Length: 155
Image: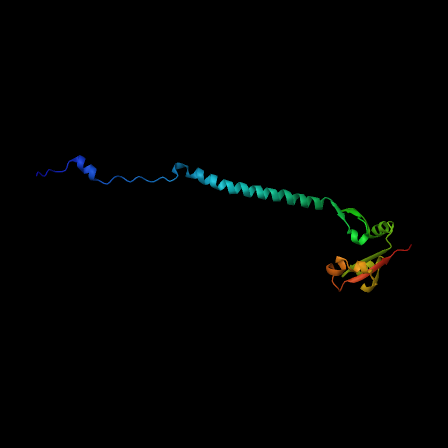
C-alpha cells in the first residue's frame, strides 16, 4: 500500500460544490408584481368611475330642475312644479282652487304667524277630514305638537 499525496483531481472531487442562488421568479418578479396589483387597481377604478357618474347625474338632476310632484293623495291629482320655478303661495292656492279644491290644510311647528297672514286659521285636529287624518303627514311625519291650520276658499 502506497500512500501517495492526493492529486489535484481528487482534491476537487472532494471539495463541496458551489451553492447556486435559487431564483424563484427569475428576473421578472417586478413584472409579476405589477400584473398582480394591476387587476385590483383596475377593478377599483371601474367601481369608483361608476359611482362618480351615477352620483353626478343625481346631483345634476336635482340642481337643474327635474320635475318635483306634489303628493297626489293630498291634492287629488298630480301637480307639476319645477324646482326653481317662481310660484308664490297665492298663485299656488289659486291654481289649485281653479281645479276645484276649496279647502287647504297644513301642519306647522314654526310658521303659524306666516300662514295666518296668508288667510289660514288655526283649527283642532278633530276638525280635519278623517281621510286626511289617516295620511302619513298626520300620522308620522309631523309631531303632535304641530299646529293644524285650514284655508277655505269662497265658492
